Amino acid sequence: MESKGYRWSRRAVGFVALLLVAATVVLGLWITPPDVVQGQLVRLIYVHPPVAWVAYLAYGVTSICSVLYLWKRTRNLKWDLLAASSAEVGVIFTGLTLITGSIWGRPAWGVWWTWDARLTTTALLFVLYLGYLALRRVPADNHQRAVRSAIAGLIAFIDVPIVHQSVVWWRTLHQSATVLNATLSPKIHGEMAMTLLLGFIAFTFVYVWMLMHRYQIADMEQSVLDVELEQLIEERQREPETYSDQTVLTQDVDQIDQPSKV
Amino acid sequence: MWRDALLIAAKDLKIELRSKVTMNQILPFAFVVLIVFAFALDTSPGTLAKVAPGLFWLAVLFSSVFGVDRAVAIETNDSAGEGLLAYGVDPGGIFLGKVISVFVQLFLLEIFLLLGVVVLYGPKIGGLPLMAISAFFATLGLCAAGVTYSQLASASRAKQTLLPLLLVPVASPVLLAGTKAWQDAFSTAASLGDPWLRLLIVFAVVYLALGAIFFGSILEG
Amino acid sequence: MNGYVEAGYLAVLGVLAGYSALLLGRSRKMKKALLPVKVKEKRSEPGPTE
Image (tube, rainbow over the protein chains, first blue to last red):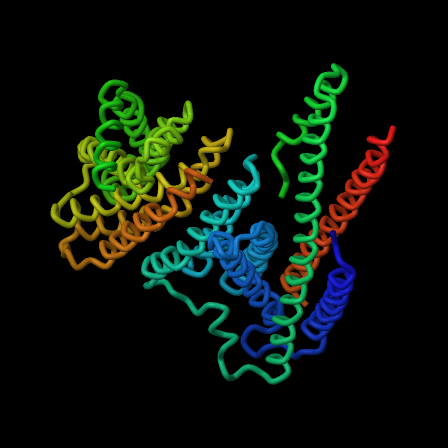
């Protein structure tokens, strides 16, 4: 169960995240000046790259947790639940990266989508981790699911540079300046740079809060499953022969058999 | 490990010789795919010839999904895979055996499919050494990644829908690199130092290693 | 501004708020679901003394 310290730190992180996001929005939409080249459109820079950064951070966390589960010395079901939680949050942020990128691309490049290397990699990443989450929904016992999804998570992460390299070569001739290059350019206004940095921090806090919350839910779901299983075993040992009990048992078994949502 | 791998491969190929699933179902399917591509695109001369390498590799990718699914299903039905482990067969050997068996089937399918592409789409083929070598590594990579993912998805009751979702994004570099390598082979600039061929080799080596390392854990876990 | 900027910010804030609401809802549901389990455990304790 949730400890008091965990609950309070989660609330504190949530509060800070809320404040920072509000500040980013206010600064990004109203305080910072419009850009010389991009005009008002530049305001999207305060949300799009930070959201993309969080997506990569989340997948990084998933991979580290997968390794920690696969390594026998650090094997603990907690790593598996954390990997799953981080992947789910990562998929949300990857989706947002694609949406905001598309919204930005339309006025900036005149198209909703362009076959740029970074865009294509992000789209494939989105599908890769949707697959990872789908694999997690396959009913199996805890250890089996944990091992399989840890391997899948790890392979997906190893695949990312291969995918990226292939699409970079594929698009070499059409490569246009991508968003991140613009942010790294030294010409960026001081106020704007600060807001961008704030955006990175704000969305990272949002990620941490979501991860803590999602992990908490996964942990509770897991303990519900475990308690149900313990009760089943207990009931079976205590009264093995009454007819009415057996019908109750089969109902319970059906419930446990259902795909878990962890 | 290698002895086990050859035994498993021989067993699976014997099963294929008797059941002829790849022969009678997957190969005809690949041909149908070639035909419906022509419906989806344009039949005017030149168009199909130009995109022929891409269509070929797409048809191979689709076929490989069925091929690896079939190879793993042989063991998961009746929990035969657990039996093999209980006999002391090396899990890495099972993996390599499956890869070899699917590889042989898929490579033969590709030869037939290439004949179909030449007849139906009429591309100007050339650069045979580059074509053959890139096809070899592309197929090897596809089989290695495919067998691994197929085993990962095998516990699912919905594995027919789960496997393509897992495998196709992972294998997309093979589709891309295979297509580009063949385009290079068909053009005059065919050389064995082709960067796409290098990518195919890296992919095959990485997935063979990953599969050999993890296959045992997937089987037991 | 120009519509696109607003749409971008709305999308980010909307999706994140929606997901947060979903998390909070699920968390509340799970906490409720865990409660009856505790009650059951307490009830089963006097079992052997009967």
